[in-house]
Image 1 (cartoon, rainbow, N blue to C red):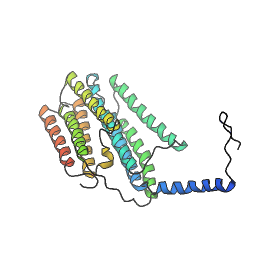
Image 2: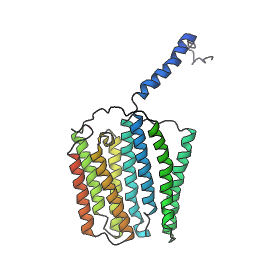
Image 3: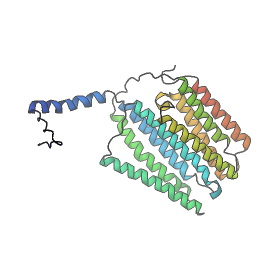
Image 4: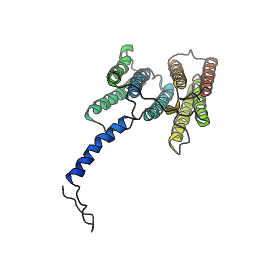
Length: 287
């Protein structure tokens, strides 16, 4: 192929057939070296966990619409999704995962995710206008999302080679403080779920702002360590318990009067104490 000279510069001398073939052969070697650092099995497990989380989240979202005065409480549930996306992304990068160009098959998954989001939007609009939705209809989007993404993750898991040895990552003081800080924010969110009226919505908005600030700090200047890449099962369990408590009490508050101030405060204290505990017992390398 002829080269076009840049300005007054002469075109480069084209490589010989031997050199060009050497370049092409090196592509395979580069791919092999890259694959040696990608943990396909753990990435498949993570994809399966993501399918479960997204299915549960979408189901929760379909029940997360109440009266118009309390609809802003749904912001808290949106914040939980933001936390998961950030932490799971950090974990995936620690497995060697990288963003790739979207292929034809992935467009189908993107379209499915968009349809799931639209179903939530339709559900919100129906309930805000006073319409009711059958119980089974609220379950369908989450089930469909889990079946599709879960089957893809399961197929990848069955084809994946053995897991690679994981490099130890220190659970530094900054990581411990960030873990405690995230737990405090979630504890405050749980403790304020019983607050009624505009103050409850205000607390929900403040929780979102705090979480978004934490997320921005994690990317700007590395102010917050990549917790998703450092945490072990203890910290992930605390996140699951805190998220389930926050989402559950938010939903119960929106649809019933069962959540009292004492109950919300006690649950918030327990969530905060759990995060403090797991922040003291170490990260991935158990240090």
